[in-house]
Image (tube, rainbow, N blue to C red; front, side, top):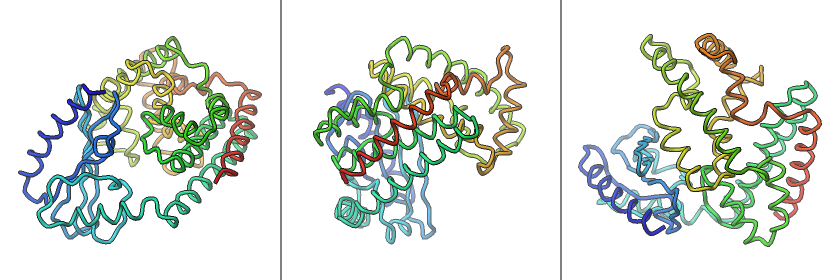
Amino acid sequence: MTERLKQLEEVSETEIARLTKQPGVMAVGITGSLARGDVWERSDLDMVAVLDQEEDIFYIDFNDKPSVPIDIAFVSKALLKYQYHPFLYGCKVVYDPTGILSEAVRKANEMFYCDAEVQRRLREYTSNADKNLERAMEALRKNNVPSSVLHSRKSLSDISSILMDKARCLTSHHHRVGKCKEAFKKLGLNELYGEFLSAIRLDSIGEKEAQRYILLLKQLYDISYPFFYRLREEGRQPRIGWIFRLSKENIVENRILPIYKTGHYRDFVSTVIEEYGDIAQAIFDVNEKNMEDVITIFKELDSFFSKPESFTQLYISALGAQEVTKEEAKAIISRASKSVERIKKLT
């Protein structure tokens, strides 16, 4: 942990110097685990930079360096003044001559755990969990087993957010399982943690299963990157921005494999599902927005794919949803429903 902390501090100093020299940057802050003081071996560097712009601007710049991935949120001063930004909670301000970022951080710190905001998040998470369970059951009625499994997992992800909020365990999906365990322990619910892992089918994940995911991801990346590069060269940009996660250079090497290398195999598989599950969901659910774009892209990928099995089949296999039987999917929904109801009662 000390080594990772040293790495983050060194990289942050370089980034602070770089950002403060950029024209139009009014303020810089450090967010995430480095700001909160809970750095661990997979922590990346999270930062915020305020732009001297009167328009509403917000975007995140991802820099996947081999040693320390860097995520910098750029937000305009116009947007910062009138919106509440949860990502600023616990932010450590390092450059702010006008005081604009310090004031926004003060508001975020006051609001993040205030009763009204906690209740708003609770309603949002609970509503999403219920909706995803309904979608899981509807998919099962249509004999769409993989889609049912993914929706059940989404529901449990929403519920885990409730738990972590209640236990004040801030996290990203890259180490959700590990932080969930911490939240269960804080709330005295150790026995429920096993049920949670079972419901999301992560209870039996070990090194061998994690290695299978790595092989599948590498196969997916090897074919998808040149394909999407060709699309860009042809000037064809599908309307779905997140589909380019499949083709982002070094995302497997720098974002996914480091989790595997730490031996946290459940977090590794959970990250794979969280990173790529939305795309698979669009394949399964024909009523999803922009479905035509997704179908077109995946059909082209299948024809572009040089192996006997289709790209789509390989992709679904990488999410671990294809091999589930209908009876197993029913059991997953049942376990997920029970977990959702038990956790609702705690709130």
